[in-house]
Length: 166
Image (cartoon, rainbow, N blue to C red):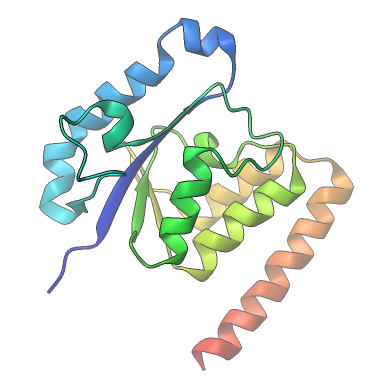
């Protein structure tokens, strides 16, 4: 049986985090966990043919990307495209907010829909991040009207998913 395919996504949102080498700390934390994760997952890289490999060719990394608007040139856009093409089964992040902490409803929806409809598992150092925890992360940065709309959308998605699954 094939192991699920896992990739690492790291992101820093601003210049302060960039100066504090936060992306390097995320990479180090993933590389410490990589051996353990490889028992359960096939670790795949962003650009496996590139030689020699560097962190930026191995991993999906966004430096200084604050998730305020969709940007096709980001590693996140590349990652979501790979998720949609069934190349990825799981994404490892140091913290769930690296993927979902956005004030842009469009961007949150794009990420959430891609993960949900392609059955992508989100992993962190503490294990699988469940959908309840994701919803807390997603809604924590939202206003009341956005939260209500998001909950309605989630409810509709569950109904659609149940019909699809039979």
